[in-house]
Image (cartoon, rainbow, N blue to C red):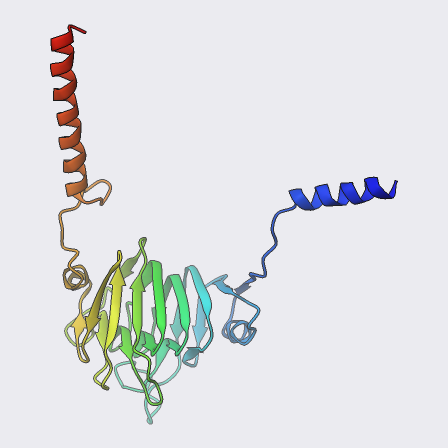
Length: 248
């Protein structure tokens, strides 16, 4: 009986799914978001609804932020005179990723001097990333005081960057003029950026050398389809000549 029990337990363990330590938490307020950040056992923080914050949110540990297509909006003040205008510089970013790694996806970051600061960090953006409505631009790559690591931005394969308030004085992506350099990577192509460089959404692909013809339906490289078509055509000619010779 004991042996049968052991065999039954072992069989059940074989069919049980592997359990990981990954932990996801849904948050619905600034306080819940900050509490989740302070808990290192939480791997993914998901917004359950739009959130307003009165302070810059600092990310200092590896984590995934899943906006679930919700908005995080800064509603505090700016500068020493406590201005309500985000065109008054106060160093306010809706999110700052500081000297760590993070993945951020499907979120709108708005209301700050900028939406996101990558400060000596490695950040992957994916899904719908909306940085409209920030006073000085969307995403800054920087290297602040006591930071030696260069900022690195990776754009995921499903990235869709939106910035409806982009203009000359408020670019979508830029590198700080603080001695920083950085990198931006997309589709396996990495470009090293110099301090002070600024980019609009339409310039990003050109900077990365990705301004190639695309299939309008699939967004795949037309060259691939041309190669497949050419190979198929050669195969057809070979088969046709063989069949004609052998009368097949």
